Length: 434
Image 1 (tube, rainbow, N blue to C red):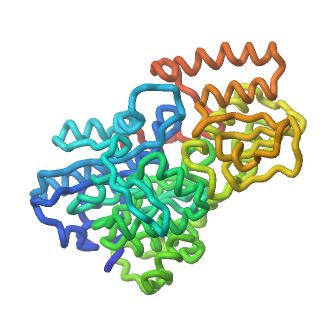
Image 2: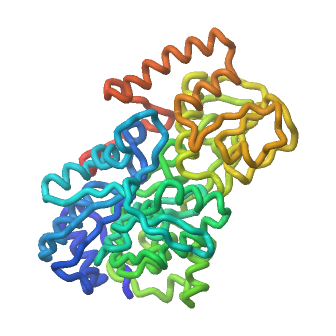
Image 3: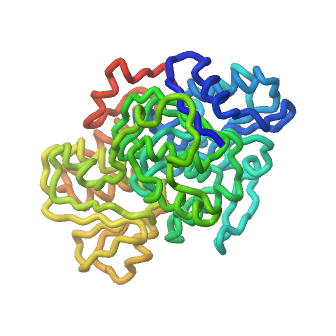
């Protein structure tokens, strides 16, 4: 197999070159049922999308090239994270609309599929039963279109991890609470075959997976291959992450006798050395989300791999909002725990157990403040933080102001901004890519 590296220049030809260099359509037939799987995991009206979700530019380009080839049965499918806001409209639909994918589907007559709505097929992955979208399993040709980004739990989120979006919500949770995240990502990629991988590197993301803690950079790179393993090995190398340190890649290499040495991979197009970076993947939530606002006295340590994406996304947004609304405040030593892996050393009212997993794994703590939910909603999370950390008058004031702002966000009348987002006003971050 071959991995192609092509410079993005804004023309369809650069994407065409990337696919041609790796012979990406070699096994494609015109009557194939084609499924495009972007990374559109977040409803991102608040968060800048750069490096976080697949650009509509790349999705539209893939659709155009498939139509040029003669394909007529094309779908775009995703299963977005749910539960962050108290809203009735499906999150995947919001994601498709917010990133321009809905517009593309209407323009070209492409079908949109919300994996969260099913149907699912139950599969056994190493003794753990999970539900996988039948749309993904039944596709004749799956085009896997992830983003070039790091991940604070999995180190990188590229082609392999992008297929996690094909799971039911409960199965996504199982990947984390099983404490076998890397193994299950590996096994999922044995169950679902990616026939073509196109990593969208117009932007890349450091300290991902989102732009609350993560920092996006303009990269102008497209990575393509018919081999998802080789594509991810090259993608990880470009991000500055040793592929041998990425658990699911190491597991796949062991199971299939594959080499993790990037020197063994045939690379066409741009020289690898000319596009390599050195990005950080790990972050501490308190340092990245609270410290920039001068908020101290709240500990929110790195959660490991047992914190599921829904809880992680909701808590990150809640902490960002809380810090913004309480600039420069010292809260005197409060500890936040979430997921299954974090264990407090004592029982005190200054401990907050966030989500059902943290509560279940710390049953002996009677005095700790408990926020139930899987995940807890954003509103519930903010109210819990207010009650625990603020005086009653300050709680009432923040509750009134924040309720109005959240209503404005839902109605599209108010746009939230957070520390560090000024960078996305520069010309290198182009809204027209979405």
